Length: 195
Image (cartoon, rainbow, N blue to C red; front, side, top):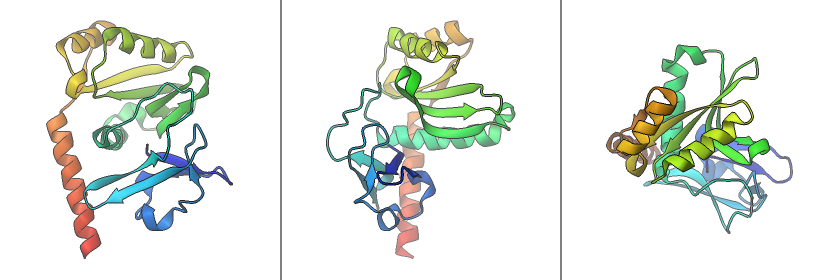
């Protein structure tokens, strides 16, 4: 989880924008944005920074635990979209965008001034075409367009074919590159702390 909030003020904390979260964030006040239960902060020499539940999340939102690679993928793809997709030049980028109407949290939302929203979903774990369709239908039911990025166990020929049939293209995340980039980022953070 890359975002949490302070329970007393509601201020949203995006851990990707905080240089030294363990020393800056008041851990006594920080909670999950969905269930309001306490969360902890992880950020170490070998661990990418993120929030984690201290107990099981009680929210009824449809979401699953996310790996460090998934969290890093959200950061990497949002940066890629921001700088390389000119059609998004006037869109606001939101990581972990909460959508109450369908009880989902989108990995990345591109929010245009007109109100149009395009979500980019990253899927690394195994998933069926039916599950991809169900999630896509949920977004479409409220007028949100969906783009899928498949990696690891989700990047199967069957899922690629489903994306091509459904959208006309299939986008993949090269897990080896993502894992390598994550390790390099963690090394850079470790070196920065030592200096």
